[in-house]
Image 1: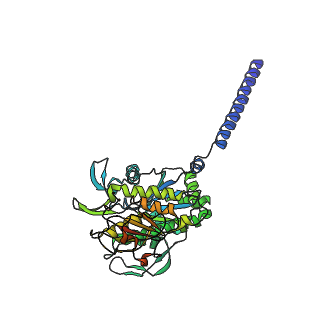
Image 2: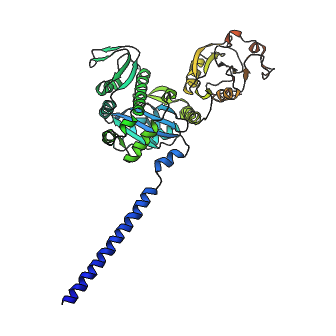
Image 3: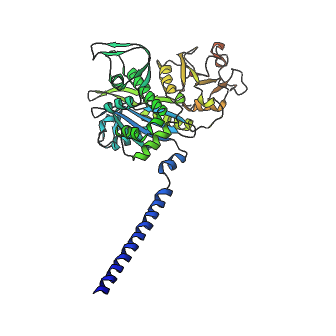
Length: 413
């Protein structure tokens, strides 16, 4: 009996030892796998593509503001696209014309994201939803956000709203009021502009406080204010990357369109069935990834637009088009006469390839470079155009004279 018990004890000890060795071996394998597994976010940023992040500021389960941040890490350049909720589209999943935010579901924003991707012609890599209350908490965590207020706001009838003019640091409570209030005499364009500038201030502040946000305790609080589908490690990796944005060079675009009323509600229908904003986004992505050693890519080129036709308002509508592409339209008016047959571009930029990019927006190839007597000028061009007022020279990088061959979007001949 004694010998049998000893053998049993010896057998049990061997099993335990073998089990222990197997556990160590398995643990070592798992450690090696997770240690050497490539970081998916690192690989994503190393792909060399512009990546797009959706931010939704939510109030009462509806989007207050929706932004798509386009960013290209190698150049540190970014652009912000503001998508108004009142955009009118044919919503595919319900097969009717409605506001783009009509598909918004605070518990699942996949359908909303898909409509924005279709509108802009891009893929959205990441998305974040921030409620108005949580935005206030984030602002307090960042110790305030700086904004410039051009004119003091004193509104005692609508919730006692007070903001001084000049540079102001907003705390969380003030920030919530600042982006949500709407004065009776304030148009939507100004409201959206104010919200855009505030959101840019939040992004800038996140970059400035990035080291602070990397603290585990702070990071935990910050992440709790965001609703997203990516894991904690990827969230912080993403915001760490966004901290590198050159915020002095961020361009801001807003999806514009024509206002119409449908079923009793005012909607904004994107210009040319959304083709314009898709082209703007495409060119914006290309400009973000433009590697250059000089300052050409950073210049904002100035434009003068003159109506050489009898079509009223043509120059103003065309100015809106070029502003959408990031040009600074400094002057809009009438040409020397209203019977120009051909649309003409005076290019004083000094860079013919940039002039071509300017002309491509409206498919115009009729150029005069530097002066009306440049060697590349079309010698068959109307004599009066060749002797165009010298006063237009040196006033802007480009002067665009609209002719009868321009249909409001493209030159047709």
